[in-house]
Length: 316
Image (cartoon, rainbow, N blue to C red; front, side, top):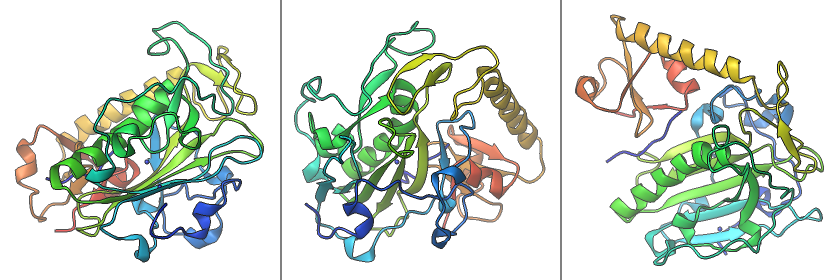
């Protein structure tokens, strides 16, 4: 079964970009391969109304020497502001927990100023969760302060969880390994991360089954966040968070996407995506015809539309 997604610990080795937890990590926002251009946080797009965007055509950047079948995990020390840095792992079945998650309430991540809102606006009421960088279901970490950041409910459930579930399902089903790295992205001395970069790569099949490189936005629609402190408040009418569009704009985007999908369904040429695996197929490729009757079928106008949604092209 293929598990590519759309729509991201002491190890065998640790590259330089994992050892410095105080650096604001630079990433690409335009889904190209310009890794050498020194893309900064400012190059990431404004929150587009979806929980994440794909980076570098959804291709991660792991060192070949880390592509091993030996499980490992490593976490960065907290920086001078008490912030988490890079968490890196090679997820194997032997890392996964055998018991339910323990209590993590003793950990107060940087920027932890929680606040309760109407449950129609925030699922569960409270805006913040203690968000694992490496999910508990992947490495069994409980109250590890090096692995917990302040993240919104939306960021945790709509943004990170689908990727974590995909990696977990793949490892459990195949007993293979997935290189997995999560990098919090901060603006200057802000205590709350603007989001995280999540990267993954299935080792035994060279990324055929699991491969992604995404930026997940730490936002909560309808709420304005002060990332410097962790304070939050209801968004004012007509105003947006620095990382948010208005709710109406988000609704408009959703409506437009629905119209695009309907229009694509009527097109003579279709790009067919699998919403579970996050792989897309072009006419003439293997499995293209079979995708027609898949319950996970998603139609795109073009390959670029699929890539922008975080999908990657089938290799066969």
